[in-house]
Length: 340
Image (cartoon, rainbow, N blue to C red; front, top):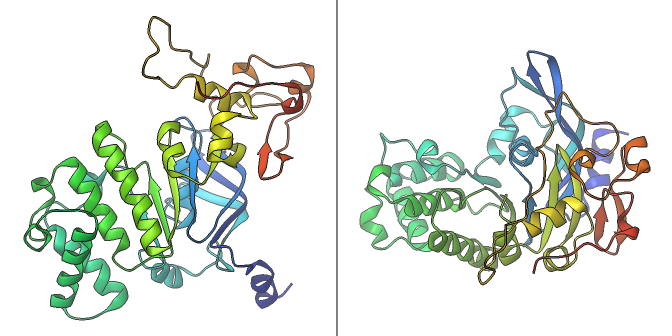
């Protein structure tokens, strides 16, 4: 298939489609697979939550979209990342630089390490805007103040001259969102943007992202380990475990009736107001190391529903209902409980 025909074959109106993505890291054991066959999509104006424990492959997947993983220690042996019909994996670096921060932006989970302490907030937002849109420094600073006002920073025209250390944690996260939105991207990748913030600020960030989606129409890939945040924000949820997608569903469907034991375990471990005197359920064991994956189902050693078929062969991700998929060979036999 020629390059043009290959592009046309994938240009079906979807904003982002990750297709059978594999990512390897170079370790002292050689090349080790950390993301195995991940596939999902994000539509225009849609919020998709990407959920899982630390080490499940969420951030590696998101960083792969913009090829932000270090070339010396990572590789993508197979798979595609289609963005409006273009494969970002095969895109030349020069073209990709025009996509980063312009058509696709990313909000990182640690704003204090992402913002440069030597430059003002306004300088940093203006730099992104001028890199992609051009214009004068004055116009770029006006855009920076406009974006800070959009994300709810009081007295934005004055605060644009402040340095990162003069902002609170929640305000720095808002500044990162303002920077990401400065060029009106079509896709926003938010990598745990509410981590390390108190619950009040978390709620504000979630409400802000929802409002920005409604106002700008951008698609959002929201990465988190907090299912409570996901059900408040996302339209659909993709659950990852040990480098694989184990379940996909509409947010409320997944919350009320999970189809994979891992998802059910995550939901049962969520604390709930009003539940007193009971020990919080946990998932036994820990996520396996990438070089020591179990035979058959990767979640099998931690699952309370295993049978002989679970260890014979690795289960495939398959459609179990309209709009739902699960990587469990016993989905139809189990009646898993949702969140209380």
